Length: 194
Image (cartoon, rainbow, N blue to C red; front, side, top):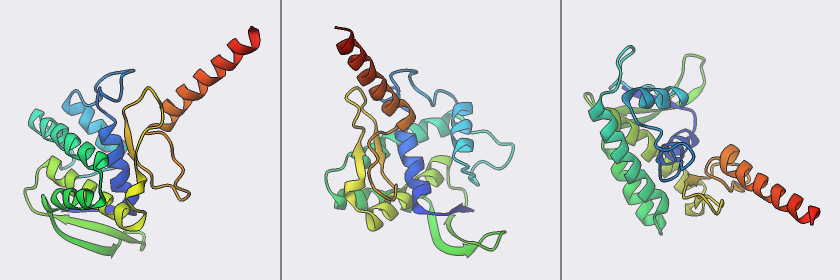
């Protein structure tokens, strides 16, 4: 199978969002990946198509359990203290299912990365190949400093900053950033009313 992605940011984005589906981070709504259907929605939201899930095939409870274990491995990589730890761990993730990495033309004639995975690879292993490759790309191109904790004081989320400027502050900007800005606004209003 070939997982197509246009840039390492794809895999890094999946890594970020996967880590931030946990109840540990999503204290507002709890665990996001509670069922195989929730995993299907997560993959669709990120436009991830895996050979382990041919069209019309849903992930199983075992697939979900393996992806939740992958989430813990990915979180450990985002928390890693050194770039060597990240490289070693991301290489392990990539090796779980990758048989080839190529730059090929897509149907529209654009050059796209394709990760060929081993036949019979599981959902979690194919996803690990995508995540690992994305993390390696960020590590090589942007550096270890782009692996960060959320700056919201009430959040335990992590993210990989693939933005051009490298100034991202929040794991889920429209949630953590908005919460912090709303809290500051309420504090200013309280202070002004005194």
